[in-house]
Image (cartoon, rainbow, N blue to C red; front, top):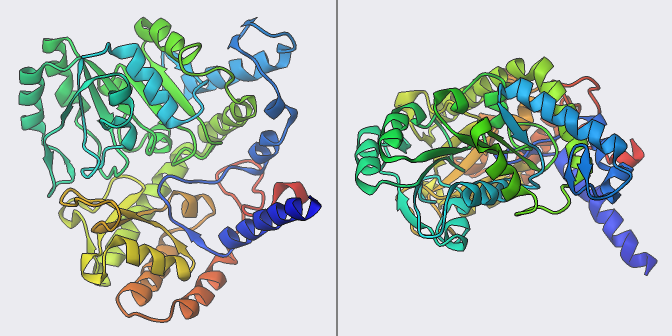
Length: 421
């Protein structure tokens, strides 16, 4: 039996080594500071605290109340939110709770389709299907990689949805919340915004401000551009807090991963101090990498719009074999990314594109000059067809100078196992 445990421990160590020697560019990932990683391994990971601060169903929650109250206070301050719920355990969980709070079975909702960037939890085979909702898709302009505003307003007035759900998985540009608000008011619709990918940019006053632009509810993962532990958060207006809270607990969450709440509380403080600087560097790195990739001969989407306003870059690699093959080649070279569907795609198995995210590279201190190097490395693999192992040697060499977490208070080692740090 010990051999089996050793095998698991060895795999964990190899995983740390893999990422310590790679360029992680999955747009839905990030790394936490050292203190957050230590909190994730604390006794909090063993405990339950059903209920709310000061009104628990279990005893022994005195200090858990302190932690959760601080997380709520920090989130209200950082996002200027009237009400906050920190209990959701994932972005999908937060979306389930929001849709249960804001809709009834049979209601109409409007979302993005998956090929046009929508998250799978917005699609008919996920939350809308569970809730038996009538799904209508936003009209989309593939040249702009965004919702067609005029057509959207017409569709809202015609279809009269109960809920308009913004946000995306492939998310290059802000969504037209302000333009939807007046039409939503005419038909009596609520507006929700899934900010999972861009929550850190929102916290850093970049990208957009959904609550001020007209969203009633904002959901978001806490581990993408927001560099906290895996989990989620819901921000909303006071008028909806009872419905939201009940949909979270007892509706969709029992125990809410207390070690993650502690880590979130610390990350909120980090983002209060460093968030604007971090978000600005993410945005600059994304635009810089996109420009260099374009100059190297890649078909980077939306060149006419400056490529992106988020942490993401979308690259059409159909002429190089498609997203699946290109992502696998890059992985062999130590560049970790993912294949991604574009609006014209029918098959998720071998889509047109790849999606690149720069939030983790930014978190470990990389800036514009490193984006230039990375663009050349990607070009050597994908366009030049150079042997991946040769490129990987240079990836490892580049990564040696970027092994510590930045935009936090402790600057701990980014990829060492915290048990042996």
